[in-house]
Image 1: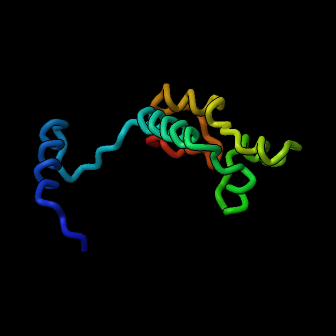
Image 2: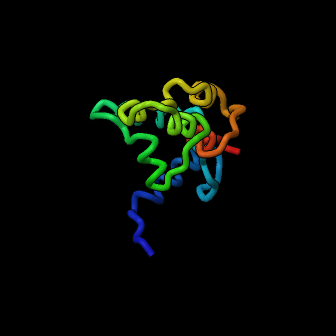
Length: 116
């Protein structure tokens, strides 16, 4: 069992007071916020160089969304497979704009962020 920092209890009580919820209730971040943070982190990661290709991600066992799967099998060179399709995908825009975005396909991080 990990040792709790003494300030943890104080901040939990403070959050409970501010939200009107018991300290033990689960407080979830809005799906829109999670989506915007994820998008910003991916953009920041791209600043340091190309992200892993969809072929490499698939070979490593990571799930690909339907659009990444199409990009993976497309007859383009490996260099082109480093393209981040999430940046232009309508699912990203919907998830950043709506709390319960109407997106449902598998392996889409934006679907996973929805508080359903």
